[in-house]
Length: 431
Image (tube, rainbow, N blue to C red; front, top):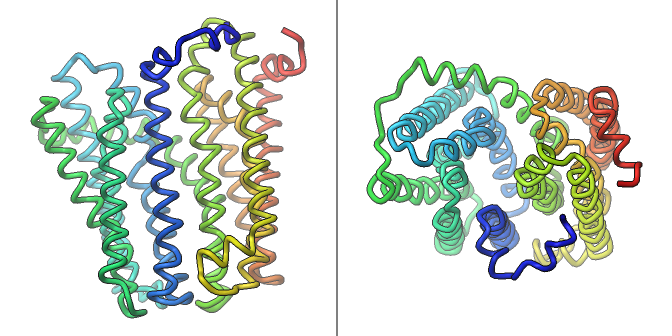
């Protein structure tokens, strides 16, 4: 069946809704990557390496809180929207409750940070930056990406995302020139994102005829309970992948934090590739699995091999050109950043090995396995990172994060062998 894809006209492929969703998701991620790459040298030049590190540290805290704001809705909400595309009344209730839940969660998270800062004097080095960064929580809460995914109309939201990022880049050029202006960096990102999201919500209301009802707290509570495992799975995975910078902040000065942050930002951008591949192939993989498991195995092997090949290329290029990459982004020589980047360069490659395991968990709706995998991975990362950072500093942390990807792959393989043995054996059987 898959071999026949080559006979399908290109125009038909492009018209396919799943392909369009993938292309527009790729555009969104690519624009985010491009803006990140362009903004890094501008920020370092404007606010300095130490303030750049604190801005990224605050951003790491906010991204962690965004997992709470998302609360698994970004995974299951597109499915709910897709099922009810033709039922405007039910769709309106779903949309209203999800937006209400996310805004409520953003408010609770913001209050927690404000209490932590002003009540317990936490986050001392970057309190002001962090408080100003809270705007990003409401930008995340109002982002209707999941809605347009479910409606299979990604064009508008991808254009809106690019526009908000360009406004953010323009704001950096016009307003960020001194270290004391660092508090406005994340604020501007959230402000422009929120503004564009409001226009998208107006479009949803007027042109897509979606009514925004008052929140139905019973329905919201029910959806929150059903999303608990997804939320904790996302939270565990996020801490394991992105928690290194926060751990490092307890052991080192702001300047070292900035140099590590520069290298980590490059890798975290590339680390998006495995996640994007999973999002892109998951719908088709699920369809194949339901009708023909052998076809699914053939398809998933091809996806895995292509992903490993692409990730290996990116990792090798990053390793070999690390000095050039850091010089371009920072516009100065930062040997420590180069050393860290050389170690972290292989994280995307190691992460790509786990793509097949994640796809299998998803198509079997094995939330418990995803939860256990992510939290075992998270616990290992926290223990390894704290000890490695305490004894070997930022270099130890880089190796701990590298080993975390290996441990995650081993754990996932074990669970798949225990619960999905037939599929695992299918990988080594001729079909």
